[in-house]
Image 1 (cartoon, rainbow, N blue to C red):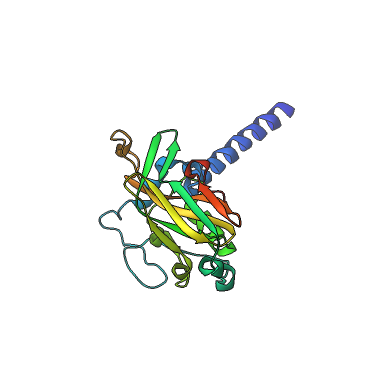
Image 2: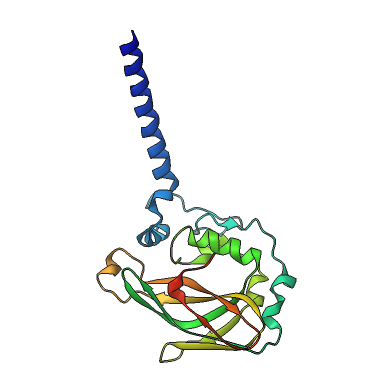
Length: 211
C-alpha cells in the first residue's frame, strides 16, 4: 500500500513539472536571448488575422501601455543649460563580436517613465527592435530628448548637458554575415551615464543598459 502511494505521488509530480515547463515555454521567458529578438518581428502567417493595437491599426503586435505616468517636469532638465560634455563611441562589444552604431544617437534623461519603457522593450535582452510595434509611448516623450549625429570615426558628443543621470540610445548594425542568419541586422540599445557638473562624461554601451 505504501509503495503504491509513493508511485502515485511520483507520477503526479512528473505531470505537474511537465505542465509547468510547457507554461514557461509558452510565456516566452525561456527565449530571453539576443537571438530571440527576431522572433518578435515574424510576419503574421497567411490565413491568420493580423493583431490590432489599441488605436485600431492593423498589422501591429499588441502594444504595451506603460503603467508609469509621464512627468514632463522630471524630464525637463534635458533643456536646462549645463557645463558637461557627454561623449562616446558608437560601438557595443558582445559575445558575438563588436556592433557599430549608425545614424544618430539620442540623449534620454532618466525618469521613472523612461525606465519602465526600457524595461518593457529590453525584456531581459541586450537590445530591441521596432519599439513602436511593442510599446504605446506617451506622445510627449519625444519632446524631451536631444539628438546628435555619429561622426565618420564613430564618435558623438552632446554639449552643455545639465547634471544628472541619462541614457544614450543608438541603433547598431550587425555586420557579421554568419550572425545575420538568426539575428536581426539592426537593433537598438542604450548606455547609461552619470553627468557631473563640468568636464566630460563618457558613455559605454558595452556595460549594458543600466536599468
